[in-house]
Image (cartoon, rainbow, N blue to C red; front, side):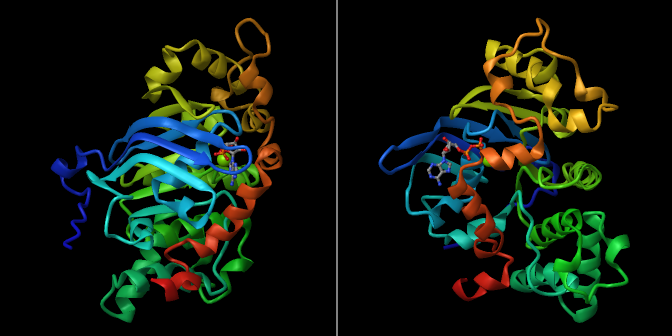
Length: 336
Ligand code: ADP
Ligand code: MG
């Protein structure tokens, strides 16, 4: 079968929606089934960053993982509806899941360096993609991806040291570089700054800011302030339903649904980043009437409490995903 990989480097291709969902539902089966995503239809515009926001447990990670079939590594998941990549189903397709995951990259909350050098962490993606002509070309490309994620200056003198020796914030950018090196059409990011200290989180945010005009990015965040800073489009998910979706300006300045108004008014005031960096003008104030609402109650007050409220099972999945399901991981190379 001829696989047509549309690149988004022409004005015409840029106007196409690279990724969309059609009535997508995801249910965790078991003794007590949970329908975590309920018939969601969304479009993720090219070369924009879409933020998926909502309180903990509302299905954000589930929705994100279903976009590149990451759920297939779990036995207890049922999916209906569809995800379209450049207009073609990622589920009803002859393409194996690892191929889909090359085209739709995924960066998890907890970054994991591959057990190889900094250089090889990035080169591996290029090697499996076959995207270089010579060692000099590989060197140049490794450098270009490390520059894209604002890591080059920090690592250029120690490219042969193990990636795992970097700080967590640097490893998160290394993971971004590794994902970009397989030339994905879409990049999925799940709470990619919440395991980081504020300074590292800011650096990763700056990197996403730089990348978003060039890549189609879908970013899950519990941080309203982060969504305000980075998003072009916002999707507000609540108990598996899309409450509201709009461009970021319209979403924050003129929310339509009452629940959106409550959510914007509530959690921003106790957003962990807002608390740790109150100089941020996005930190906002308390909700207009000063009352607590259900979203603000369920909203974590800092990044760490997000981890604490995540279901243990999904954390276990995240930890293994970093290597097991990452198409750029040498640990999965034998299955591709
Ligand atoms: P969020 O990312 O918004 O915090 P999740 O997508 O992790 O939300 O979870 C959505 C719902 O699905 C929650 O009720 C959660 O408990 C449930 N859930 C998540 N992962 C699993 C799993 N592996 N097995 C069963 N239920 C799960
Ligand atoms: Mg989550």
